Amino acid sequence: MTDRTVAANKRRTQAIAGGVAGALVFVVLAVIFFVVRNGDDDKQETASAPAATAAAPEPATSSAPAAGSGAAASLSPDLSKEPEIKPGTGGPLTKLVITPLVPGTGPVVKSGQTVTFNYKLIPYKGGAVMDSSWSRHQPFTSVIGAGQLIAGWDQGIPGQKVGSRIQMDIPAALAYKDQDLRFIVDILDAQ
Image (cartoon, rainbow, N blue to C red; front, side, top):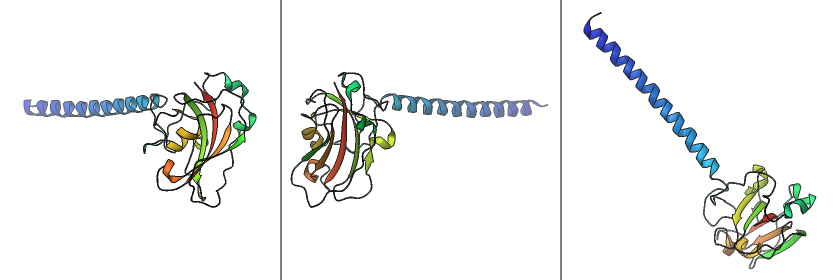
């Protein structure tokens, strides 16, 4: 082999090694991105339906509430079943309407607490489910009454008891401004 052939083979080997190294770096960075992103789900407020921002919800890490208030052990078995949600009648809504469906026996939720929920959302007048923690098989956790959620949640959840299932009919002015909403919300825990 000539010096030219040896040099060409060396460059080719280096180019292949560089390409493989670049691909490995990409794979490692992608894995790190997904691990970090999924690991931050509990810490970041990224909820959609109840969120005040346009981010999509990311649920808490399990279908059981966090152990904080001790109320988890006393939750009604009704809260383990996904609720049916039916459209409202009349409208447009002019005020927030809370309808208790399952009475809670736990402590009263206060503004500023971190609360764990299951929820289901439809347009008030009916239609397909717009969002649901049930479809992800994981509850949603957020601070309540601190402006992180839509105003209807910040106004309607404080004062409710842990272990409650409530229906919240939220006027557009307290939601996303475009339409009235109906939520079924299970309050699983508050810390």
